[in-house]
Amino acid sequence: MAKRQYGNLDWDKVIVALLKHKTRTAAAAALGINRATVWRYTQTPEFHRRWLLAQASVSSEARAKLEAHADQAADVVIQIMNDPKVKPADRLRAAGFILGLRPTGVPLDDIEVGRL
Image (tube, rainbow, N blue to C red):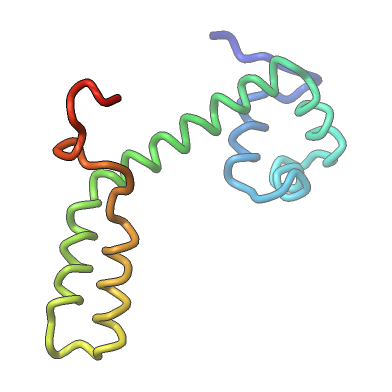
């Protein structure tokens, strides 16, 4: 896909700056442009679409990283819960965390065929 430009700056640079910085003002400062220019870019429908796709991609990548380490994180919480050397309050907090993650709803074993 060809890089789209609005003025002298290509959209990809603005999108990367927006992803790296918390505000339009900070993104504009990093690029050496006025924040109004960044705001105008965000008002362009095509830019807005590409910005949303970039955000979705970053979120998807972050979610994948977290899911890849979920087993390790669960092991740590279980170790804390079961370690008698850990303060009781911390063990209780770990147990509560685990209970808060349990699935809700009706277990499949409890569903009778034909009753749905």
